[in-house]
Image (tube, rainbow, N blue to C red):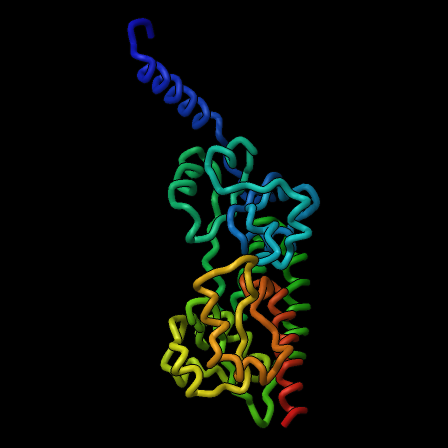
Length: 287
């Protein structure tokens, strides 16, 4: 390397390291349960924490430790947190990486080029997806029996919670920037399972989109469910303090808010349904 510029020398060293690493990298043996699993996605974090054997999961994403986003924030603090960078993940020497389909493409591509197996999970969009993703996670971790037991418990509890009351109150999911979600979403299915009709259908919003405050007020839902507030001040959340919204929010002062239980398709969605069932019964008692 004599006579090369410092930049060329560094690049040559990095190329040599990369080639050596690529040649030494191995993938999980076919049929063998992975021994060192790293998760880069909030939802795979939680599915893995629910199903992994002791010592099998070695790192979760930093979001898993945030109680505003994660239903398992306390449990997640027992694991080293990662920020989804290929370099830091590779140094953990995983034989399996769990990612979401929206996880950084660069990181996923780099890890695969290094010979590490990466399994990607799409976002959960329905209550059925909870079951499907528990089963898939059980398969990739080699924890099928544990997954099937959790699915059976989930199905039993969901069946007990599902409601089809004679009178279905009308509800709105309304969060920062006036965003709402319709029936073709996980949040929409949580709402329907608790016995509510979603006014997003009346507003022509089948999935997710903006619901103008004027439309919300004119539709006059029986219940407005807002998002959990972040600390500090936010212009996107200022809409939730608008005086026109106050009478609708006051109708059920203890209405539940969408929180970490709603974010991912895990059995924790059952807690969200339980809270809504209680709100519906409070509405019925107040009629």
